[in-house]
Amino acid sequence: MLKVYPTLALGLIRILNWTWRIQESGKEHLDAAVSSPEPAIAAFLHGRTFVLIHHMTQMPGAKWVSMCSKSLDGEAMAQLEERLGLDVVRGSSGRDGLEAIQEMIQLVRSKPGQGAALAVDGSRGPRGHVQGGIVRMARWTGGRILPITASANPAWIFRSAWDRTMLPLPFAKVEIAYGKPIDVPGKMNAAQMEEVRIKVEQSLLILQQTANERTGFTDLEPIQAVS
View 1: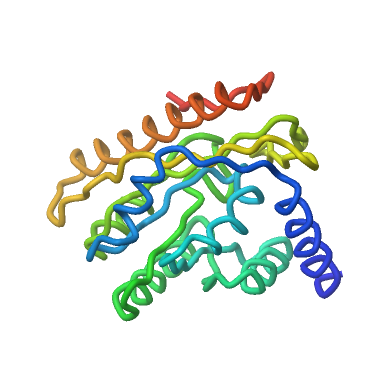
View 2: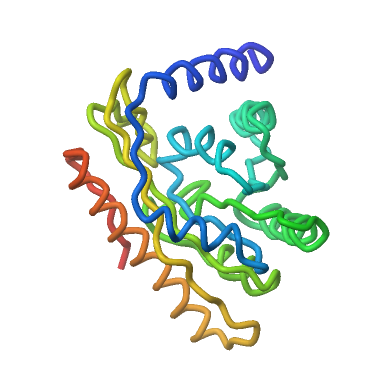
């Protein structure tokens, strides 16, 4: 199954992307991030992964390394992302996640033009809650955090999944939205790092709400921060 799933998923994603009516907003923020001498550290929500991974490989001048968990699902996802052209490291929450973050940092530092992409509320949630790894990644690479999200209408929601994965239906209107890059100081204490984390979270949630309004997408359980 691990050999079949990535092939089927790759074909599905490519076919769907061919039918989607994609529009982008805030593209000037993407252009500024990928043309900057500082690495771009893309921050997106786990439930928008299937919408974004193909699109991100098509961004001119952008190179991304992502993270997939060491589970069986993560293995299938890693194979899919690698076939799309992403570099992939393996890890999730806990110790494996810290090691994976360190590996991503080394790749970003060693490859000119290399950026990193993280599902900031993955791999177990809570949905919409940005974890601290994205801040450490930007701090230790000297990168800037680029919020990215997507919305679509009509779209299927996987309600049994913790992240309520969204998959745009054929010929859906798809909005890819980029937020203003967030600078991360190299020297910060714990309180300052938390301030940056909250800033990233708020930026993503506002960006998601705006993208939803543009497409007309609604969800009975909208994404929100966890207090």
